[in-house]
Length: 50
Image (cartoon, rainbow, N blue to C red; front, side):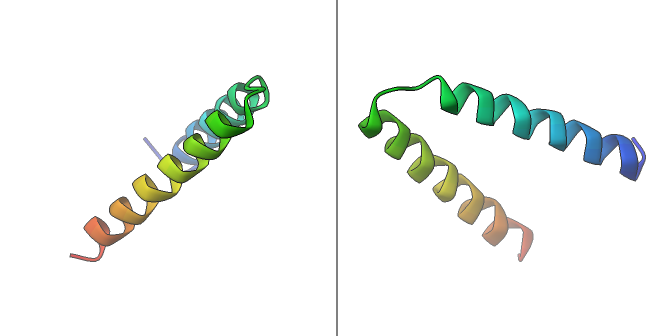
């Protein structure tokens, strides 16, 4: 994959995530999802720095 297609894929995935998130009406569930995403991002970032 070149840089553009990689960016396009991330953009599409982000849109899917936002659309799914907006369909969740339960505040507690949305908060759990945000916390989970942040933990995954932190773990991925620390894996990249190794």
